[in-house]
Image (cartoon, rainbow, N blue to C red; front, top):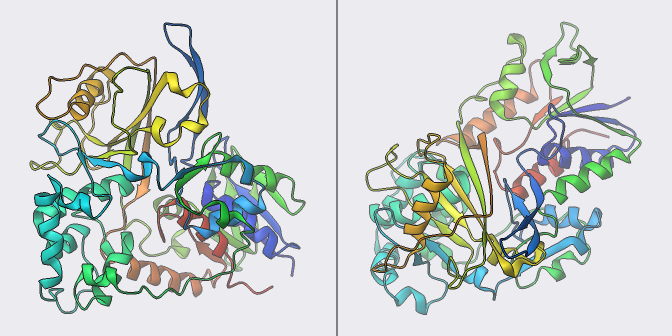
Length: 492
């Protein structure tokens, strides 16, 4: 059989799929189709040159998408090993301030509060009243999951086990940082499966379940070489030229493979199962491809818009997606420093809910603290990234630099101090990413099983697989893992 696999979408999942399929089926032709001029999807790293008024210059890496990875994703460690990226890795050790210090900015207040990073810090104000009582009381609560439910929102889960104040303060902030979403709408089982499992393991208590051994059934078919050794004691890591080095290395590798072709600037116009059962991928250029198998790494609603009525699939439009505005800021170095040492801070849901009257900031990353090794002459500049939008209604006035700076001054001024006036940034960049993070709603896991069943029979008969962030997880590790598993059920 002359196997021809077409992969739809050239983001990280699509690139990972092409990489692993080209190795699994070396005799097959692998065609990856991307609608834009570049590969990598939402990952975007750029090195810019800046200078201050005193003649100092620097080359600084800016990220408008994901900026760090955690070392627990073995699928990514495997790519680092196989693509020869080891010498380009930069790490943030667990002993660093960027790893130990993370903050919250409570709406309607001034300044930041430090999240617990040790047992003793839990007993310090304000965590002594804001965090500790809810955690200590949770194991004593009776099992209170309603009979028969198989999923619920993150907010319902947190409220049920820890109370509404904890759920709003910590639960909504966590969801803002990962999904840029409303915790009152997001599925806890899809977004944070470990929490649901802890409650099961702890006989109804999340805290008790967290203290008990966690059985793992993960696959161990990863060729990681000695990369895990360099990740010992590491909190997060990136690459010297940014996360964009990962999709860049994948694309370069794939271009050099004789059984892979990469098509960019080629939007797909339709995806059809013909009357004779043949698969047809039609490009907007008019080109028709007739593959034996298809991997879709497209956003699920985009895939839905490409399908013919005789081959439609269920649940592709069930999950909405968050839109995020990313504002990169570079300041001249000041004394005292603009922000405390640490990774950054998240902003919980306001008491009044999401409203156009709120600033709309989800969180801010102190990039200079976490990833200074990326930048030349970094000591003379301060780099920060502000994330806005998600469930917050955003207008152009929200994202004006002066408006954001005024809000940052409130966030970065200690309580009871005179309001800090931030200097003018020497470089700014604003980018809007529409529908960039899928938001799985309660029941997502069941819907994805039903989708999988539909793909296995009917007109598709197992010849189409749907992968990516809208299916199994939004982290970079999840996306790479989805690509690694693509086509595993196909026989050689």
